[in-house]
Length: 265
Image (cartoon, rainbow, N blue to C red; front, top):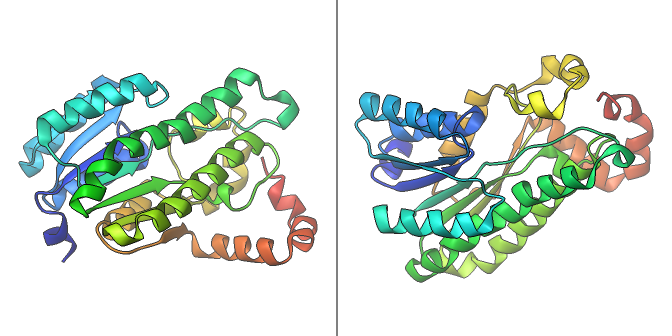
């Protein structure tokens, strides 16, 4: 059973103060896991910590962390090792996006997205890799996006970061294949979270795709159910992933026929 599989395991989740990160934390706590929750908002983490400990009687540690600060990543992960010992599962969930056309994106926005979505994810992963390889046990789950498979207008930079995450994840999976360390990419479509408060300032995209938006609880359950299994990818919703397959096979046709939908931002 999934609950037995996660019981007493040490799970670290970045970007855990809200959205699917917080939902994953709740489901893992319900299944008996010990948690380390990381985010920039320590107040939200402490409230979640209190709620989960009272409800599920599991160990929950929280640390303030901006994953874009690689020096801070090193310090915080060393504190985690000193506090709980080995990390069994790392969920790289921290990330953000800004929807603008390429010529409108500032260099600071571009650097910010890559520092959080890509470099921060790699920095956190690098901290757990040596121990997971040595133990020949562990699971790294990277929250990517369908945007990493199908680039769309007004998301050139965000899509580029998620393409990078998928490339890194796929390579990492092959590197760790002989070490019994599982690597999973999660590629959701739009999710009904606060992500779009920053990404979609005008609210246009949310309005156009609202009926297709995934609920964070649904995505979190899929992620949690995959933990410590050999799941390669989680693609949500399935019909959207079919679009990525068509895109690979017939890119010109897909871009022409899907132009209206792709421009929904």
